[in-house]
Image (cartoon, rainbow, N blue to C red; front, side, top):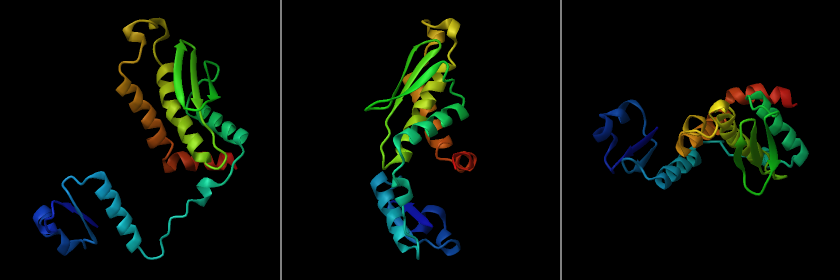
Length: 178
């Protein structure tokens, strides 16, 4: 377990928790700074026997056309209408709604980092789904436009992080990609 407190013993934070759950590592700060939390988690992983992070599979070269095909499959699986939008390559991923029925996504594929391209596509997919589902008959009015950039970004982060990084998505996707 981790203890997060302002230099206080665990008992000062949550009673005598260290008598019930062993505290393996203390992280200063309440709340801790992100760098302190990261360093604490790394130190905790270093204490774990036999656990070594091996991300070699994430860096295995995958041809760019295969990465694009996988990204287009993910777009379709998650409801992006490619008849009303498109996916293109670009230096920087982005999404642009030209108008009702025309939402353009761009992404970037890298030979030796295939998951970067897919997750980038899924991020832009969140923007694209938001744009494709705005009221077409209200285009050009406040009711037919994005309510805010924060709401727009929340949708893209939801698709990228809660869907694209979920076990459920990969349990669905991997058998179909083999």
